[in-house]
Image (cartoon, rainbow, N blue to C red; front, side):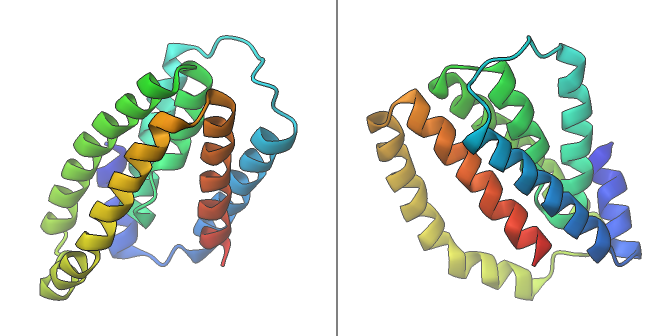
Length: 160
């Protein structure tokens, strides 16, 4: 539902202010993870996942960056880096497939977009392989810092 709403907003309105506000929120949370979060905190309730999924769908539909709300939720819910990574991979597979369908329906996918995707595909494959190798070699603390840094970079790019 969130992806359909977000895609509608993307196709109908200019949403640069919302994108910047979202970037500020994500950057702030990433800084909290890097400097003030010691991995402690109460158990995250399951219904928060529904909210994160809906927000992720909306933001994915609007900006193509629906991951941060789900990453924030799963980072608090799943402590094991392997389970966290596996859950994200499945989430992104399902979510991005659905997002592709909604973008096609809204006529946001065209020949130019498909050519650009093919151009980026080799870098994606190489990055994925490098990330898979590094994932095995790093500990949980470093993994959490990398998650925070990726969120920070995403937030900054949304602001700019």
